[in-house]
Image (tube, rainbow, N blue to C red; front, side, top):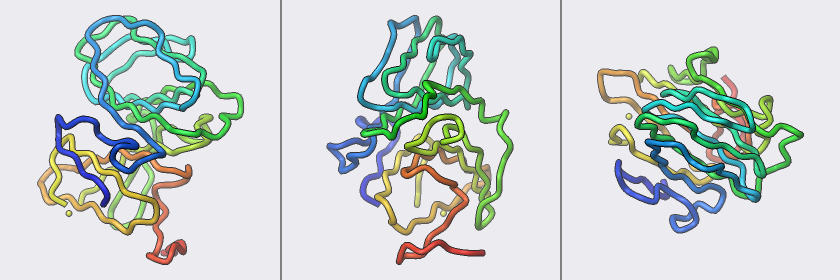
Amino acid sequence: MRWATEPGESPLFGPERGCNEFEQRVLRFDSATEDRSNDADDEVLYVLSGSARATVGGEPADLSPGTAAFVACGSSWRIEEADGLEVLSVLVRDPLPADGSTHAVVAADAVESSQATAGRSFRLLATPELGCTSVTQFVGYDGETAHLRAGSCIHLPARLVHCIENTGPGELRVLGVFRPAGSPAEAYYPDGTLARY
């Protein structure tokens, strides 16, 4: 693990912490905003708490916990009205072309759960199928251990062998963004070959 931050720490990660591919931050809104856009980076968003009415890529969207959005570089989004909205934003540096897609908004509870290895399941949020060609954003669920607390942030460099285990009585939820895009069900051996089960 290259970096692990604790709740409230800032920045979460980015170039200053050895992650040149992404910049992660928490955004908070209690009122309307101007258009937000980025001509260089894609952005994937995930609502942590609160609610809002927003416009994403020119279309209205209701935001609530568990809602995710993909906004391609050059596209915009804005908050029309917010009530304690807290959003995890990940800027994706040097994105691949988005094949014409400018945005997508997905509610995690509206996506079917898929199974992965070792008792894990996940729901795909931003994916190449929705136009987000550079990364896959997912929320993972692990009913089965790193002493992390709610709100902890981890940056794992590519091909780093890792395991996250739940030692508490409740369900562990992990929000992940990885590059290149693919399936969170895939597992790899230390030499980089795909594990087959």
